[in-house]
Length: 226
Length: 226
DNA sequence: CCAAAAGTGTTCTAAATACACCCATGG
DNA sequence: CCATGGGTGTATTTAGAACACTTTTGG
Figure 1 (cartoon, rainbow over the protein chains, first blue to last red):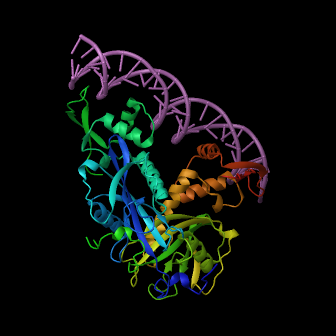
Figure 2: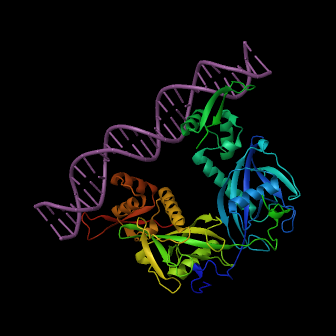
Figure 3: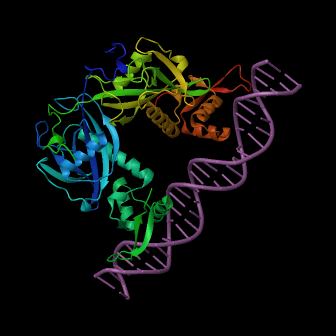
């Protein structure tokens, strides 16, 4: 029990108090080639050079952690206007080999086809990895961050079943079901899945049929406003 | 979109990067006089002097946010060996009138009778407040932190119904039910409540009867190991 | 026309809810 | 002995799970 210096807790402006680098990392998930993928960057700097890691960076004085996560994502990947959700905070002491760093992690869902990546010299490389085939060399504690993000994604989807960003604007119920089964690694009954998804009342039948597919399935889309 | 300086995101050791004060605040809930209460401290320093706020303080270089929350709680209130859970992170720019501060908030449940408070000169005052009768002058954005903590508490209890720390080791089912009804501000059916709580299989009937109460109710306690 | 995928309804089971009386104890 | 609170079971409703056949379309 250190630092019992009187009133420490209330002194939020104490000039000599410890200050810490805050970083953000963002787990961007996409659905590609029938697989759930995550976007990783290849590190070009010392400490874990050429290891893969989540896109992330240090927070500046004039931005919230969420703004930082979005800005960093743009700088590193060109991705813009992405909705992201805060996951959790990592404050263990040994996270970075050289310097103490506290990290806020975020999660985002996008449709890779609609969001082309832009490779800049800010990263050595940029790639979508299948969740079941992640690279072996991952920097820092990002293996944990990735797993935590995947679990967060599953919990959130299970509650809300809002996959909107992972699919094209219009999609068939089979496509939605396959996405569900891919993410959760389960098989579900078609009728029960449809009953459940329609009950949630988030998607609507456009009455248009998708051409080029046997059976002539209807196209659905997410309802506006929520 | 500022700070597009190359490789910023990967440079976690960049020497001139912004560093920020991190603080923790902890919402300690207790059940006293039939009401759910929260422990607040009275601020003795400039900026919101004599306003009430959650016990909190700045994180040091050698501690995680959770360690900081526990240490600070001890320093300010004498409370020790309290289990606490991380709630969320606050990083808005205007949270403190003078200095940028990023705060991690925590939640804890204790039984006030078992944990006497120790008033030191670290705080001006220290008091349990009913959740439905909070003081009017609350410092910083702690009104939000308090509400967020209360909602967090409710969500967690609803899932797990683990009130262990809020009651004496042994308690009657009526006491447990009244606590439930107090926290959630609802009335529930006695038989259904009992069915549900016994189904969860977290508490066990000691077969001892509580004396001094009409009807001679049995005393229950939480099972060990979980 | 036929193979492949889409669409659709009912039964069964489990969980949640509504509801009323008798029993034990303290005073 | 009586007033107060404690203890208990059943019937109903609702949500989730299991399950098979017909229709539409592409090739």
